[in-house]
Amino acid sequence: MDNRIKIARIQVNLTQQQLAEKVDVTRQTISLIEKGKYNPSLKLCLNICHAVNKTLDELFWKERD
Image (cartoon, rainbow, N blue to C red):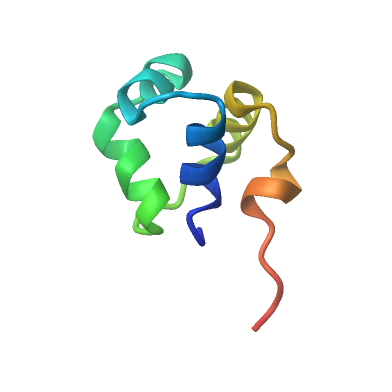
């Protein structure tokens, strides 16, 4: 995910644990998403966006290779 989620999380002063609690997943899930090793559901993507005040495009959009 190019660390966009991690950057957004840090900008709103949330730890991985705090973000995980806000979106009802484990800290390990947030870690895997930030590393690009877990493909979150659309619902989870939206919950993360709301928690860090970003849009889906800002956090998850990826241009075609």
